[in-house]
Amino acid sequence: MTTETPEPMRDRTRRLAQMELTNVAQELFLERGYEDTTVDQIAAAAGMSRRTFFRYFPSKDDLVIGKYDLFGDRLADAFDARPHDEPVWQSLRRTFDITLEYVQDERQRARSDAMDRIVESSAQLNARYLQKMQRIQEILVGRVADRLALHGLSTAGAQPAAIIGAAFACLQAARSTWLQSEQQRPFSDYLDEAMSVFRVID
Image (cartoon, rainbow, N blue to C red; front, side, top):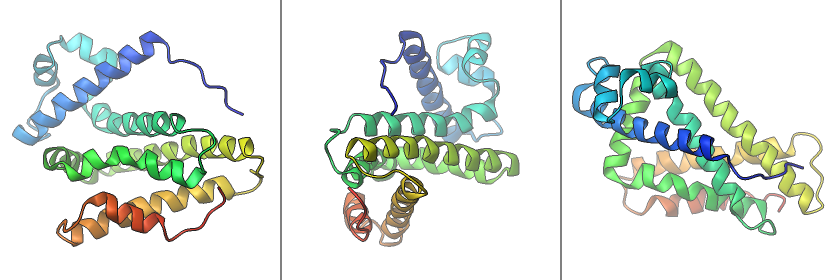
């Protein structure tokens, strides 16, 4: 079972700096376009030097892909914060609450969609994106396995991975349906409906 330890201050500071750089860069990408935004411009807008920028991201491409690492870290933190006696599926549903800001807030959604288009436009970035999404699911699979074991349930075989796969399928289905509906109801309603379809081990 994974033992939770406090995140070192240096790692926390680094992650906050990466989040700030990502937010600044997304605004510039929306305003100027990805190709016309330079590392120097991003660094200046964030109030740091070019050299400092490279301490956090090796390149502009890494900054774009780094968004998914940060998203994965936020999901993991949110799952860890759920009560350990809570049913696993319910914990996953509440963990996905952090996606609401990316979807329901128009400005956030515009930024997120712009970043997704950048990734989709590059075969190399898209391949790295798929790797990052796989990593996110693997991180959560381990946590689900630990939680199931804590409840005295079997973690043998593919069950933890199947639970995570189903949860992410629900998330994607909810987002697609919500967008197609022209946002008639809150995204959270669609997410609740999608995740209510499955009956899984708690």
